[in-house]
Length: 181
Image 1 (tube, rainbow, N blue to C red):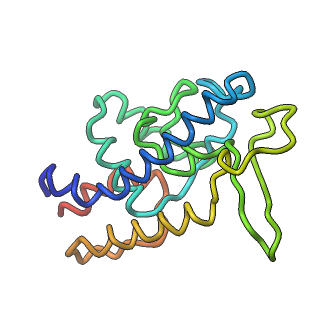
Image 2 (cartoon, rainbow, N blue to C red):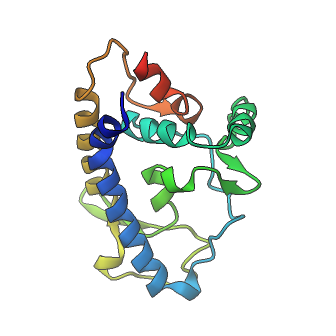
């Protein structure tokens, strides 16, 4: 699969990431003095599973890393407690991180049984008891969009490879190679 095809099948996903990133950057400007999460704040960097489209994007970014970094990541894969992409308290694929990593800790809301629930990292936004609606991400809407993008991504491949609904980060790094074969 050539780079042009890769970009085409990931285009919807990259567009979603851009939209999420704009929202997060706006929050960071608005709440500069309330956000404590920075490099080294990695308590939430756990071993995750991601949608196939996210796994593929991670894999594409992984193969562009220096071989020495790839080897460090591969050594960490056996420890399923932390994310193998986390090295020296920083994400080695920060620009390719999945949606959950981009939004974690920021204010989100969801509806459950008719009630609205708001969640955010307790280390961030200290002293804030409410947010204006434009500061919140609807996790339900975000997941619905991501599911649709993932479905389109899966349907764009003609492959015998049976992709599971969720893929561990440890397997995500080699997904692009599997799809090429």
